[in-house]
Amino acid sequence: MGLASKLEHGVAFVRARALGHRLPLVVSVVVTNRCNFSCGYCDRWDGSGRRLDTAELETLIRDMAGLGTRRLILTGGEPLTRKDLPDLIDLAVSLGMKVNLNSNGVLVPRFIDRLGGLSGLTISLDGDRHVHDGIRGEGAFDAVVAALRAARPLPGLKLRLNAVMSAQSLGAEDALLDLARAEGVEVFFQPAEHRILGSMERNPLAPEVVPYRETIDHLIAEKRKGAPIANSLSALEYLRGWPDAPALRCAGGYLFCRVDHDGRLMICGRMGEYEESFDAVALGFAEAFHRLSPARCPTCWCASRVEVNQAFALQPDAIFGLAGGLG
Image (cartoon, rainbow, N blue to C red; front, side, top):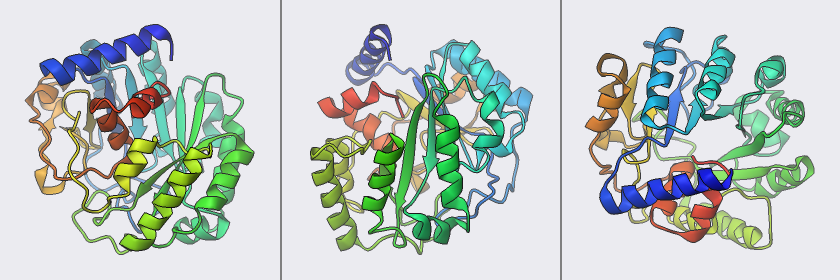
C-alpha cells in the first residue's frame, strides 16, 4: 500500500471515529452460498435461496466505487464456483478497487490465468493433512498447497492462510506455521463460533474454552518470536477472551459493511439477533449503507473485523497491520 493510500485510510479512520463520518472503505460481498465443501461449522454450501446475478453485482460494484470503496472482499461459499467471478474482479479493479478473494483453494489452479487482478488471496486451511482432510474431505490439504504454488507467481498478490480454531483443529497450529514458513505466507487465526456460520444453530465444533485459550497464549508467544501470524498482538489478546470478552467499539456501518448473497446489506453477518439488513438492490447501495444503525452486538469474534475494530480503537499494531490489506 502506497503512502497516499495509507494517508487516505488514516484520514477515513479519524473522521469516522471523531466525526461519525461514514465511508464504506471495505465491503465484503458474498457472491454465492454454494460451495464444493460442506464443513461442519458453516452452512454456506448448498446454494439455497436467491443469488444476485451478474448485472446486479456489477451495478453494486459500480455504486460502491462511486461511494468511495477502496477494498472489495469476495467471499462465499466458494466464490470460484461462479463462472463470472473473474469478470467481476476485472470490473472492480478497473474502478480503482483492491480486490481480495477468500477461497478453499480447490479451483484456484483452474482459474489462475484469470486472477491476475487480485491484490489478496486468502485460502482456508485448518491444520495439517489429517486435520484439514478430516474436516473438508480427502485431498483438501493438497489442493491448498497446489493453490498456494499456482498463485505465488502472480505479481503484487498477498497470499494468506485462514485457520478456523475448532474442536477438531486445536493442536494443529504448529504444523500450520511450519507450512506457512515453507510456503512464504502468513496464517490468520480465528475461533469457530458458538453458532454455525450463517445460521443460528449451535456449533458442535466450537472449541473448549481452556484449551482454546492455551492455544492463543501459544500463538501470542510465537507471534512475539516472529512467527508468520497475520493477526496483530492486540487482536490475539482480544480473541483470547472468547467467548465472553467485552465488546469492541465497532467500525461497522462507518468503515465496512457486507452484502449477502441475496443482496441484503448488513454490518457483518455475524451479529445474530442484533443484525439488521437492507435490500441494496432495491434501495441502491448508498441508501442501504446509510440506513445501517451502529453495531449493537456484545462481542466480536470475526478475526478480520477484530483487526479493523482494534485499529478503530487506535491500537498501533492493528493500524500498522491494516496497511497490508484492510479486512
